[in-house]
Length: 203
Image (cartoon, rainbow, N blue to C red; front, side, top):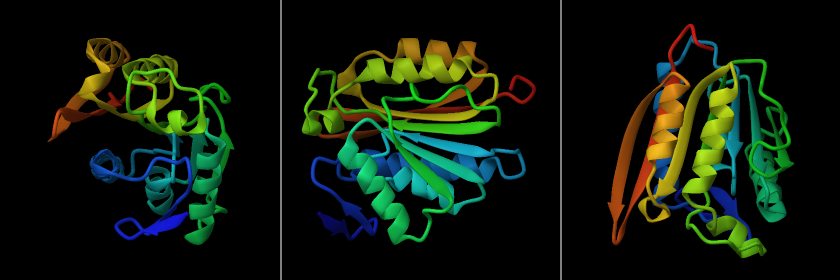
């Protein structure tokens, strides 16, 4: 375990270290929260929270309640540890959970953020839980979130190495989300962020 100087969070063993994809997602999360001030975003859900950087950003803004979820027990512990370090543990909850499988559709307007596991491989050990998943994880969350009447905004992050994101974009647009796409080229891949909010009156 060590403290990452760029983010001031503890990085724990078997937990994904904040990197370029994290900072790109963080930028988008900040923009969405700012753009939705006064628009009743009552809940932020950080799926695959890792160290908790994205969820902690939600919790530090005007979103009343934040929930951090990660299937990796080491990551769930790390998210909780960083919340306590920042004195935010009373403002949010952390749960060990596979995606959104442990909760029902929220009854309040929500923002969901998912920096998906990095690569399209199957690996069930603790290290693999931080890296494996790919575009199918983004598709799964897009379908779930899109089916929730109170979806406010969504942020999905994945690598271009994961495959085509046509299904993700189609699912979100059909759910009434005004989709935008941002990317950052790094070496042999693009880090892609798909994000947007459901048009008012649809949720």
